[in-house]
Image 1 (cartoon, chains in turn red, orange):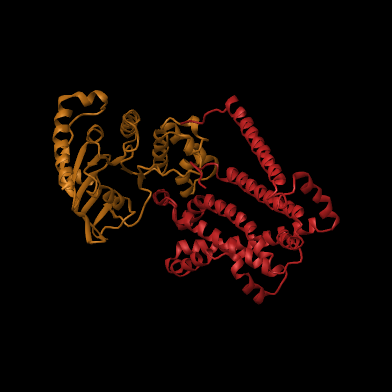
Image 2 (cartoon, rainbow over the protein chains, first blue to last red):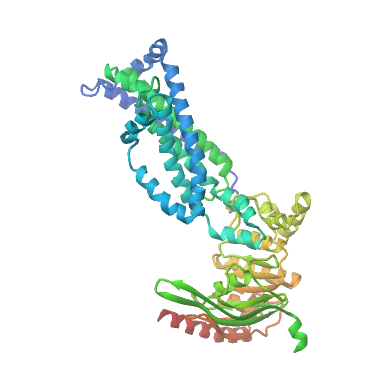
Length: 264
Length: 263
């Protein structure tokens, strides 16, 4: 039906959401504190204050910002490259059947192999440093984004294309004015899933003999059982992940708010 | 009559359409021939699988017949053309465009841009009484409103023939009745040739000057019934003896086909 004017109800709904979020956070902190006192888990989970105290420590060691920026550069580059390759490959797969028949099985096959497994091969080929990290993230993000975009394009409602045709649209119009906007939601979903994969691949990517990075640091802290800064780094990865996801969701709402319903 | 011949808008000449199914060749249409006069309102009823949608798609130029031809305005149909507009059951509005932009789509395709396109679009939106919703997105509209936008959009292309594929099939009874009435009013005013598919005998009768009854497997025309009920027609028309008589006849024919299909 017509746009329902959202008045007071919506505002209190929002407040309620925040309240629940706050509650969830408080519960998490309580659980964390509990873990930090239980004898079996206290070594792995130092309490909140101890972990927060690691921020100045890691800054003093001159690694915190270097690690964050190094990881963001690797993730960002790999992710961008993954997207730039995934978009045309997905379009080609949707458009040209023989290409899809050849390429899709590869993608499905490689997608199920944990990146950590093929990292050594990449290091042997590409050496150590930034390059192998970017390659690993590119591969992982390319796979998920290509499949998601491809699935989206082939599921575009055919009636829309028919309707455009009878309304006088030529092939070029159909591509630019129907297929492009209709696949935008899937492209954005791919971008969101890709971002999450990029971060989850970070540890594998940085096991390639990196000189800095969140994942690399966690591994090296592990050698000395420094659990407090490890936990700090883990939480930082989580914060980066959720921030990126929220930003992309905001973009989705802005660009594809016209959608009837949203999935995943 | 020679005079009548000139008024023929669409000639469907021995159209046959076969598909390759899993178990071999499926005959969707088996030699369908029909002349549609200019400004005529033809409705088509038949059980699902009788090929009525296939026929509409062939007239629209979205499908090529296996053999036979469709001639529209003296020209054989190959591909779509703006002389033939289509209204689909699933509305097929572009969800990323507002109501106004949807109606502007065919105008833009014709090269009409800017303010001129907007003004023209508003004219068609007013025709379906939705000017208040011009800047809304399809998701904010009810099914009936969406279909009215689709009709406005089809009109905006200024087709001579309107092909409608069960356009009110997904709507509730009240909305459906209302849209039937609106469609009749517009048709009487604008006088377009209408080819309207439905599975609802009442709908076929209240709208059409002729009702084409199709039979299934293979799809062909079973009977053509002239509806000699004068316009304007309205809900009370449905109570008249003549209407009920025709309804009885058509219903029994369609039901027979339905039983055939079930076998």
